[in-house]
Length: 102
Image (tube, rainbow, N blue to C red; front, side, top):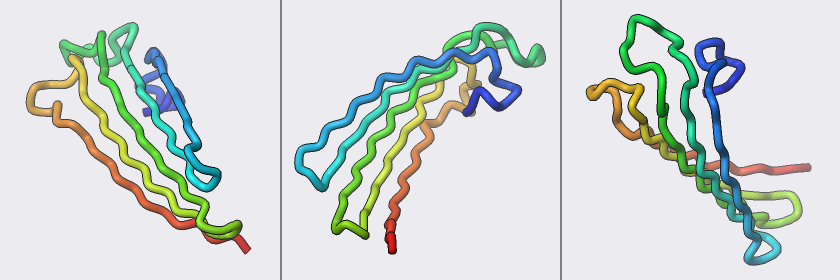
């Protein structure tokens, strides 16, 4: 969800972010995000004002060598009160990547 998306221009966000580097080649990062709407964006739905949901993002980045790195990102979106009961499943995303520079 992005503020660039016209349907969510009245959306408020609070993002708490932290990063640690336990060793020089490993970076661990995490986000806790809260989303809510100030005003209704679709009058055909009853619950469009209020808590949209929260998201948890965890990422690990390992610099294997100067030219090769590996990343793993896990994210969960937990829907809030604006979603119908049959549309409020937790969304999960897991992404792995390899970066090679030369």
